[in-house]
Amino acid sequence: MKLDQIKTIHIVSFLDSLTKDGARQGFRKGKLASGTIEINHRVLKNIFSRAVEWKLIKVNPVASVKKPVVKHKEVIPYDESEVQKLLQALQKEAVHWRTMITLALTTGLRRGELLGLEWHHIDWETGVISVTQSVSMSPAGIAHVKEPKTKASKRKVALPPSMLEELKDYYSHKLDERDKIGDRWQGGEYNFMFCHPDGKAFHQERPYLWFRAFLKKNNLRYIKFHTLRHTSATLLINQGVHAKIISERLGHGNIQVTMNTYGFALRAADQNAADKFESILTRKDPEPKEPK
Image (cartoon, rainbow, N blue to C red; front, side, top):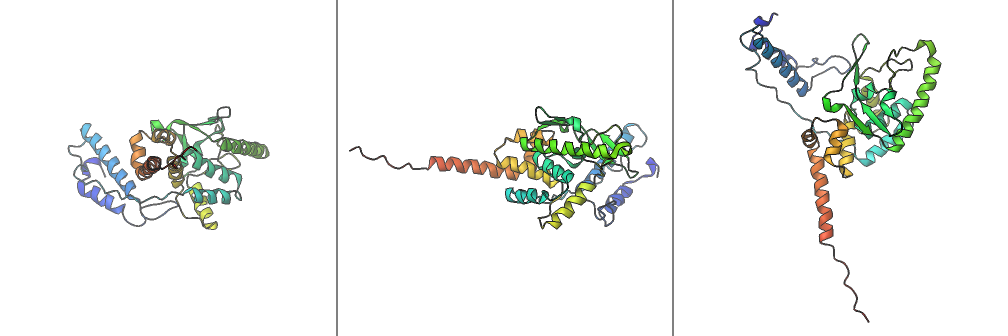
């Protein structure tokens, strides 16, 4: 349809079609998340607003369409005992998966950011990893490397010493792997940390599919791959790390995003802090004995 042919009813019908089964294509067929439908509404509204600005049309057909309601599902990240079980089960898995999941837990990186990591992004001296890009695969199998989600997503994240040692071992493994590949290398200009043996980038759905099967195999509570990011943040909150530091590690645009996302965990941590003060204030030391 041409721009000036599109009416409000067409927008309403389109958005309604996104709520039906089969709207999601690809690996995870089914219904689209309410947040995704809201993004479609926002994008369409922006497109037609620009069309009005450029005087291509007189009226924005999306302006009178009510914004779709976003239903937030409660996300329950892993607690410390579940993380320990997860790490234990990972010891039996291939080194690239073991390293990826552990890195996701210790850094809170998004899936695309993990897949976009290259070896030169690690400062081996300081133990800091630079997040500068993410990667996704097109249907034709072409890797699209792009800047992360927001400006704040470009960041540096400090690694625990044990994670740095694990990455050193993994780096040696990848060097041996590349030597065996020789002329069959297909990584081109990129040297991804997590990729196929021939250097080709993983499809963005690959970690999700592997992680789902891994949890089922080991009888671990199902969480989404992205929930590893929430788990990372919640563990830090429970350890008393300041929200500002957590916000910077996660690459949030501002601390308010962190406060909104992890408000419940932060309130619980604040209550724990208050309880500690209460125990100090109400503690009764034994009365001193009378001198003989």
